[in-house]
Image (tube, rainbow, N blue to C red; front, top):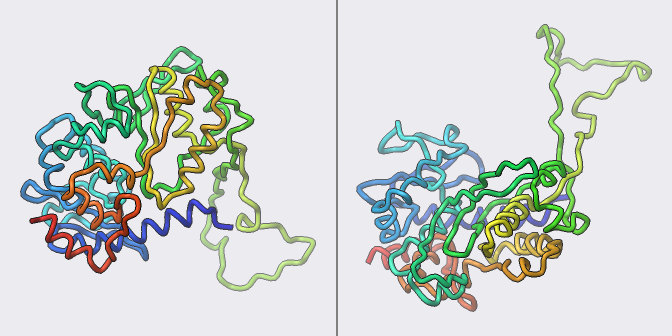
Amino acid sequence: MVAPGTIYATQLRQELAERNRAWAKGRPHVESYGSNPVIVYEPEDGRHGNFYDPAYAAITARPDRLRRFDKIHAQGRSLPRPPLDPARRWRELDSCMSSDALLMNILCTPGVSDSPTVRGLLGIDNPAAQPAFGFRARVPLASGRFDRTEVDLCWGGLLAEAKLTEFDFQVAKPEVLHAYRDFATVFDADLLSTVEIPVARRRTSAEFPEDYTQEEARVAPEDWQPSLLDVPRATTPGFAGYQLIRNVLAAQALGLSFCVLHDERRPDLRESWFRVLAAVRVAELRVRLKVLTWQELAEALPGDLQVFLDAKYGIVPPGCTPSPLANAFNLDAIVRG
């Protein structure tokens, strides 16, 4: 049985791939190999196909934000080489599926982080605070050390996790979570969602090639033994929502709020977040935990940025209908002005 989250994520990935296939025309890019290709963009002459032009200009003007491009794409070696600079390594922010790129497209656009409406939606009280991307939170461990977890966004008194096409919030074994100093204080573990985590099976090597044959081999019933393919994969119990749990613990330790930013086309992520919320014991912390969709945030953004988000991501304010996929390239002309 396919998990609902897999279905929602796959549908969104397919839509984003189609939109970006149109958006990428005239921009340096490649498509990944496989039946469901992902578009990855290469920068050219101060522009980047994965970014809204004003946002990218603002990013390149700030070395601290430009460093986010240092993160190498995990599957970069399996992608075709960049067309302009074959020696360049693909970055995670080059991918059309990157939630970090979406976050920076929005908050790095000039004027957005200063907007009272945007700040109100996210609960930013400090007028001098500016968004910091890839914040290293120090989550206390029971050993007295710290887990320097990277959180997508720290803005004043807010931590935020951005999600787009990721399948879930990761899983962890119980011993990993119990290693955090405040886990038992903050969470009722009995209320957290449990999962079965596959255990890697050691592979046995064959000494000689002749140990294998493509010919049919007849074996007497009393001599039959199951092959690796016949043996169910071993699993171990674990917890779902590891990223959320870890970030809630970071918010507790630092006295901050925490928000999940996700696409409204991913109700599975929202449900996962609500299940984690239900397990939080500390009432004072629970009121500092929130959720916001990209669509709700889009309503407070400048018109040209809204057009970009519609064309490239299909993200529009609540009550609005995203542009048809066939119109994505036409909307590009409006964005370019």
